[in-house]
Amino acid sequence: MLDSIFAADSALMRVLGRFADVVVLNLLFVATSLPLVTLGGSLTALHRTAIQIVRGRCESVTEEYLRAFRANLRQGSVLLAVLLGLAGVLAAWYVVVTVVVAEPAAQLVLLAVWFVLALTLTTTALLAFPYLATFDDPTRRVLRNARLMSWRHPLTTVAILLLVTLPVVVTVFYPQLVGYGLLWLAFGFGAVACLTAILVTRIFDRYIPSAPAERRSENGTARAHP
Image (cartoon, rainbow, N blue to C red):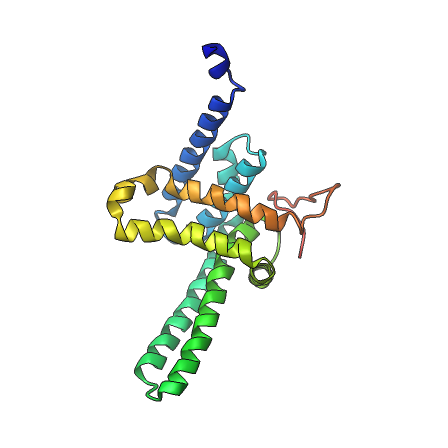
């Protein structure tokens, strides 16, 4: 019985192997994100590798991650800069509306518009890096298609939003539950990315043509557009 439990193809060993992949993925992400200026490439590589793990196509987490990191470092950094710039504009808008605008009715309308735009930017950002990790598109199209996908698949988008934000909320308000950040350093980012990958692949599979299925570019991403 013990032989069957600890066999290489047993359910237990597969689970342990998958967990080991998540830990390695997490360590790679943390290591390559430390300079901060490489965060865009790290996020893209994190999602690329997580998607490959979920699809069962990842033979080596390290090789897959580093290949995706090198291939997407420049565009991932540009994408992150654009998203941060848009977030800065919305932050400035909020300050102006709450500090400068005195008319309650006008303030309410402007805050309502701000909320819609902020929610749109948030959901777009959630899908932008997984999208870049999967499809070979210029940055403008990445943002456009990520936004459209978030609108076309609202339930999945909300699930991803909850999946990403709830661990952050728990970390901020109940840090002892995550070992004051130690669980994030051990496997947290990789685990969230893999769970997110389960959801985003359900969206992306609708836009990836079947065989000769995924025409691949040189960096291994699928050439497909919604």
